[in-house]
Image (tube, rainbow, N blue to C red; front, top):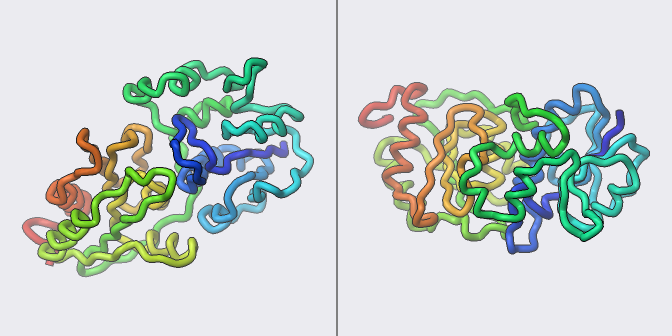
Length: 289
C-alpha cells in the first residue's frame, strides 16, 4: 500500500505544550513506526525538512514538506491534532486523530486510554507505557519493541571516554533546560576523573547528528538529542522533570534521572550515573585516567 503519514511536530502525542513551536524531537521519534511500515508499504511522510538528515535513506520513504502536494495514496495516518490536517485526512481512508461532529479530538481505531489522557493530563503521571506503545496503537498496531528509525552510532575506542553535553533545549519546552552553572559543575567533576567533555555544537543538523554518533556517552534533557542518542545506541543519561521518564524507551545503555523539584538535578548524581554507564567499557573504578 501507499500510505501518507502526517507528523510535523506541531503537537505532541500525549500532551500539548503551551508554546507554538515545532518539536523536531517529537517528529523524529515518531518515525519508530517506520520500522514496521517500511517492511510492506510505500511511505510518504509530511514533516520537517530536517527529517531527511536525521533518518537513514530508504527507497520506499519520501519526506514531504507541509505545503507539498499529496501524491495518490491508499490511506492516511494522521498523528497531529491540527484542524487543517484532520480536514485533509478525512478525504481518504484514515487512521489516527480526527474531529468528531462536536469538534472534539477522537482516535481511529479507538484508543480510549489515550483519549482519557488528553482530556485529563493528570493521568499522564500514572501512565507506564512508553511513547511507541501509544503511537503504534493509534496506527492500529501493537508495539513489539521496535527501535527508532535512526542511524547507528560510530564505534570508537578511546583512552578516555568522550562525553557530550547536549545542553540546549528547543523553544517548545524551555523549562527542560538544566542551569548552565550545573553543567559547568558537572564538567569540573568529570574532568577530575579523566573524562573528556564535548559541548553541543552549533551548525547544520547533519553536523549535530554526527556529533552525537561519535560520542561515548551523552547527557541530555528530554529533547531531540536524547532521542537521537537512544536511537543510535549511544549510552545516555537523561534528565527529566517537566516530562515523564517512563515515556522514553530504553533501547540500550540508558539511565533516566528525574527530580520532583524540577530541573535541579545534582551534578554529583549525574556523574555517578555516567560512571555506572561506562565502567564496563572503560574499567572505571576511582578514576578513568
